[in-house]
Image (cartoon, rainbow, N blue to C red):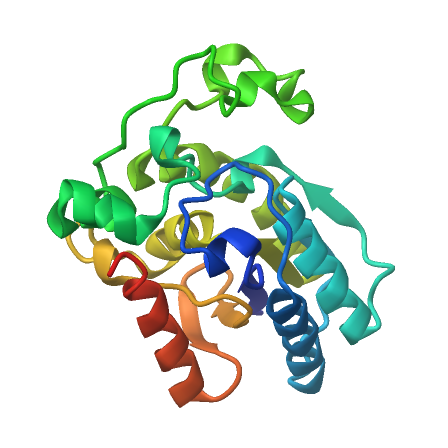
Length: 247
């Protein structure tokens, strides 16, 4: 028996368009992002993807993407689980800053380490900063020490993997097919785990918006095969565009 897992990064957001560090800041999709979400749903439907459940973060750009994709798949009735552990990486004091301007100020090597390095977090937010999750109602029931003031990708792996093991894996085993709609870094963390990507190689992984990534997993959840749905050249170009965002 094999299981199907499909990962989808949300469509282009307004801060993707502005080339800003977004993190846990809640920003909407652009018109292009909405089109990407709808196109992703239509593509998944055409490729026979039929998930039994949807998992997504609690950020509206992922939620909107999921809703549009499911509508295009005629599966808006699917049960949905939302969880903060699927949120984007928290970029700390970088949140809201333009990536190119930050690169010019701090140097491209430092910004690359912040954006793509495995264990280099940006400066943390003070708890008094309005950008800190402590001030967001959706996290009011969480213990304060769970809420990040900044994160590196290693931190995202640590907080995402318990959700993978405790929530997504049981749904895979019981339903056979699961769709996860999340963010560039929460999905990079999951792909790192699934594909056993080393800490040294993970900086080179870039996940484009609106491109479904399908996994076939065996009974032990080892990868049998994986690949993006859609045109390979377009997907490669979109991933390269993500890599150039700090330039």
